[in-house]
Image 1 (cartoon, rainbow, N blue to C red):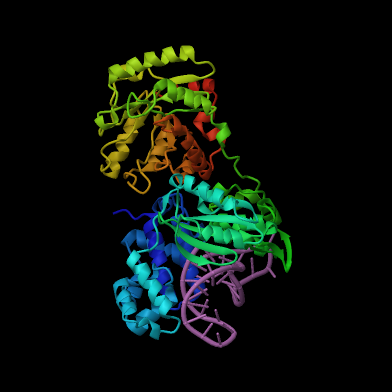
Image 2: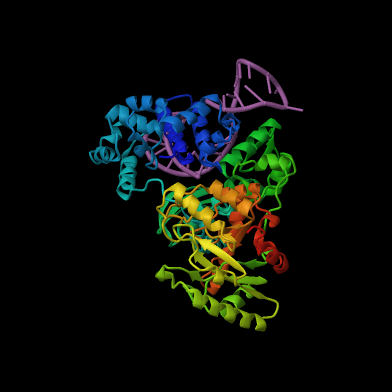
Length: 575
DNA sequence: GCCGTTTTCGGCCCGACTGTTTTCAGTCG
């Protein structure tokens, strides 16, 4: 059973929780939390870094002790330190910690004074009115804890960012109508373009703040008001999503926007940097003593600590501050850079619009070319094309290109990679096309080695150009299949083929980490819509955000090239 | 437990809101 970074992060997080309950040095606790965040947010598997001979103590927040514990987990699957703690504290205390309103101090009190170890025991004690005997607990605590347990409102699952965009924009429009409001921005992981979000953080400038707070907590979308203050309120919507609102003055807007955009790791690094320069950063500004020296704009905050503005998508504490300091920030790819789209479907397979309608919709979006890549598949649910129908579509495209001005439809196919690595269509057909996208649509359960070999073999095919949605994951629905992505990326580099970044809200596949690795390994990424309708091209915005999170510049993205250059790149040099 | 153009000790990011208090601890982001 391979140990993944998330497993190590979970162990460190549990160590932090249990140590906190034991009243350990809070900075020691924080060290475990920082390490969990570092390992969890790492692009590569730690096991891989070790295999490459990298020194783990060079990772931020990882020193000798924690590096040794990481190795211990990888080698044995557990950490002795955690086992020791479990001899004194039941593992189920973690479940209690996840109940809103319960932290280490109160969990410890519950356990030591009342012997409560599980949420069920807590509920029973609350119903019997026994919690009131503890200092810090009252009748209100008993009621709210019971409600939380009944609703099972634990840590909420993350949802795909693409599925909350409409909601976020509706909330912004709603708040803009409140009295005294001038600016409304969704900050947080949403603004950083993260593929999934746990909640929405909305920042407003308002004077006074009363009107906007009332309008926010009184919205008919709100199921429950968690907290309501003068500058900060928190609600849970009917769909379960938590939304936090923060109001600041205009003078603090930049500092607050920076602070609430995060990420946490980025903010901590920024504050350390400020400290080193004798400055203090909080959400109201950058301060030298009592004097505010910056804060009206985000740029002013960065400038105050000697940095140029770091785009939100990079603010993950993955080296962006160092890059800014060295004036080596990437010039990130943007929506305007995209010249075309190499992955779209028509009603010939599982799309909803005709070939011509799709082409015209792409042109309306400002694109110069579009590859039609219907499914060629044994999977009948997608109405896959067979060889004859592919060839007939080739003729239709030739005819359409004769009529379209200033736009080119490319002939392609999304062909199934069979379990043995062969492609579903014969060379006689594939050779007639401008590009061939290979995709895994079956055999998700193959073991890692077989899955990897299967994909590598497909990439060796003389007509293979692009690997579609390389991991196969569906956010919130299906995990990625087991595959050695490093070998896939390196093989793409050797064979001169490309990797797709599929922009579908639930795919966003490649993910940001592998985009960055592809960049480092010299493999170009293609940001595709995988559109199944005329509206599907909108999703390219999501793909661009993901690419930016992966530090990709225009030159790293295949479909930023004009048609002539693209054609040259699609001609495989290796055979 | 980590970390170092004020180094190997003595610091460690910062503030708002709630409930239970009577001046604040605990939790959260």
